[in-house]
Image 1 (cartoon, helix red, strand yellow):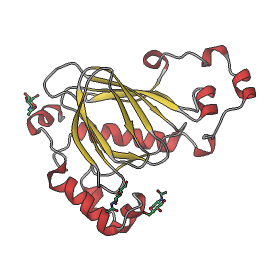
Image 2 (image 1 turned 45 degrees about the vertical axis):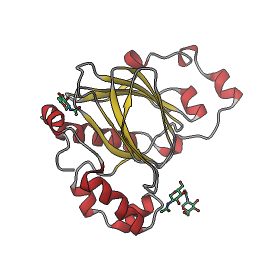
Image 3 (image 1 turned 90 degrees about the horizontal axis):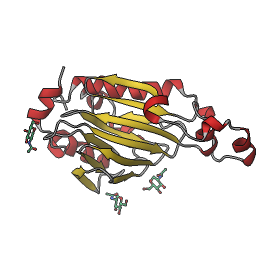
Length: 222
Ligand SMILES: *[C@@H]1O[C@H](CO)[C@@H](O)[C@H](O)[C@H]1NC(C)=O
Ligand SMILES: *[C@@H]1O[C@H](CO)[C@@H](O)[C@H](O)[C@H]1NC(C)=O
Ligand SMILES: *[C@@H]1O[C@H](CO)[C@@H](O)[C@H](O)[C@H]1NC(C)=O
């Protein structure tokens, strides 16, 4: 998608880098023990995401603050991480996938939309609208993307929890060139699909399956 906002490309590629590089996967754990909970400091039980979250990304397009498992011993013990995403007017959190956890996403304020594909592309929800109070459930391995508000200035704010202390994030279409240089068999393996399924799936994305509001996207480009 050459029309994607360059700001967002940088924004969320940086997140992928940050998550992939800063948090050793050896830290991820399957379950907590009573001893781990007893040992945790009182301050670990209540955290403010906006004020205590680690800023991963902050650009003109939006921001991501989070408390991953390595930052909070309780989240590490129960193998969860939690983030607050802010997507400003006309910005895009481009197509990506989390392979090692479910995403559970609560819309705090603002408006926007999400698009979701099943892991083999057979189920597609394009630009489903989001309102405060909505919960979005994204299965592991299902590609998805979010769009900020197109018609209102108030940003989309989402509290996002992953069932992984170390959520792995792969961006699949953002740079455009990434698709053309990645062999089909590599990406097919990523999505546990056949090469034919993969090519059908991304043929859809490439040829307009994702409907961008070009006017809106243009205003967020930097
Ligand atoms: C895709 O997966 C769904 C279940 O998630 C299945 O019903 C469908 O047959 C699959 N389609 C292909 C082409 O494999
Ligand atoms: C991959 O797909 C095959 C067949 O479609 C299925 O049996 C298997 O469980 C899938 N593996 C994962 C990790 O989803
Ligand atoms: C596209 O975005 C523009 C600019 O924000 C907005 O005015 C317009 O209503 C949007 N179009 C649709 C179809 O939502």
